[in-house]
Length: 248
Image (tube, rainbow, N blue to C red; front, side):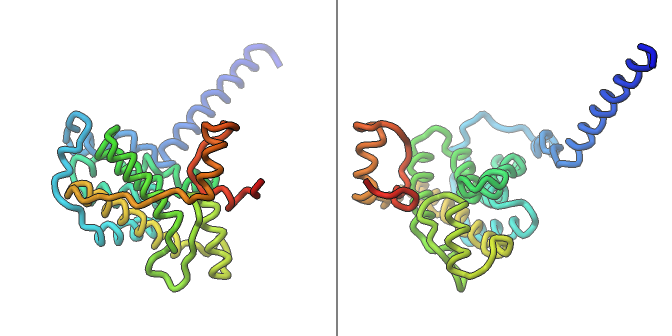
């Protein structure tokens, strides 16, 4: 084969690969890179947008929307994020919910931070930005999720013990006798519950009535005092250590 034919074949493969990549991007829904604001001819105001959160959210409507979004195929993170943003209305609802789609299954199926927390927390952050309200609400949401039997309305629920998708699903499977692949209705309801809880905390901050109740257990605090900035200073976190580690 002469050099001209080799180059032609290489060029063909490069061009074909680029075309395939372009088709993949379109097919994957990455059209969200054009925002809802652009599509509607609207302009986004200067951030932060806390001044646009001036009336209480409908907590139960957000719960229902989070569950419905999940059943619509959005995944837990996107479903929770979109439910809160739609409840807030513009300009928040102009942000494409697809930016949180990666969070499903604890981060594209890695089982880390529960996507429902991830999405709800992102919505909280969009409202309050770097304000302390973001930190205290998300901190409380993590603790509430870790300690609460979820889903709230289910016949069978379970306590995750931490904010990890992995633990949440595993404990539910033990409690229900079902397989992880059967988690759909359970995760849909849980997504609604988490979005609603975030909305509840946001309403309390708006009303000036928010009072955090989470306190680290004495057992965890003993670990924390040594391993997080203490003598060992070799890790970071607030989760219950004994759920995964043996004592020493």
